[in-house]
Length: 137
Length: 137
DNA sequence: ATTGAAAATGAAAATCGTTTTCATTTAGGT
DNA sequence: ACCTAAATGAAAACGATTTTCATTTTCAAT
Ligand SMILES: [Mn+2]
Ligand SMILES: [Mn+2]
Ligand SMILES: [Zn+2]
Ligand SMILES: [Zn+2]
Image (tube, rainbow over all chains, first blue to last red; front, side, top):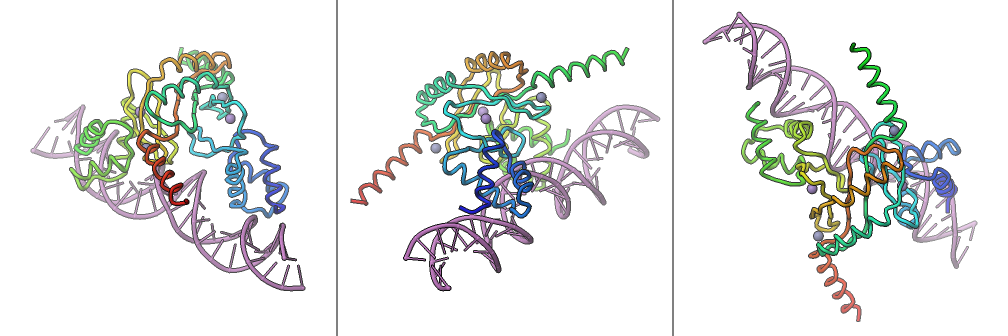
């Protein structure tokens, strides 16, 4: 247990959900300017290996690390502001397990994601469109 | 409409599902050795832009291009042999639309994927384990 | 048929997040 | 205090994707 490791672990759990390496690296560096990027990366991997987090890829090319929850959850990912909203997927996991069985497939993990636009962004986009329409006349 | 483009389009639709750039590139090169990688890549993007295919990321870091189907489908992805099995997700899309509405989220696309082991791989892994157990005694 | 502008191509380089390498330092048991 | 295994940080390697740029090709207008 090194001081770097302790700092990295603590910072990760303070940040909560959907943390990228860069984000955690930035946060860690604010407290210890000497910690290396690879150390942050390795410790995030470690946190995953010991089962406290798992990698999640939400379609923008960067891997994020999400704490594991008792009940499985999916993500609503806003394409505009990148915000992530979680929702429970208990019912659907049941369905997926069933489908898997049908296909003689042994499931390990489920990924249920919706891409679209959050409340706020949807409104803002509407406003912009309205503005454009008006300008056109 | 260039000969390269025609060849690439034709090859893509012959190959069917879940094609990576590399795979399509290989196939195209068998018929015209001079086609460039970037041309294949660009035309694949174009096929997506005109709505005939869409990118799909099944967690192994390479983007694949899947023809769009009338009914939305999900993927069972075998972690061992990388095989992809499709299944219909009509029921679940309904549920997801509902959840989205609850959260004031405007959905655009749904991604439903199961990672695990296909029939064949599961059996092979069992055999290997049995063998190991036997050897231990 | 000729021309010219716009689009497409191919080779190479750039990008960018991730992962590995390696020399050095540190932790923790003896 | 000493030793060994593990951890660290800087830099390089990696691999898929994307961009750049000089050249070629298409296609519509003459
Ligand atoms: Mn989450
Ligand atoms: Mn598919
Ligand atoms: Zn948003
Ligand atoms: Zn398999």
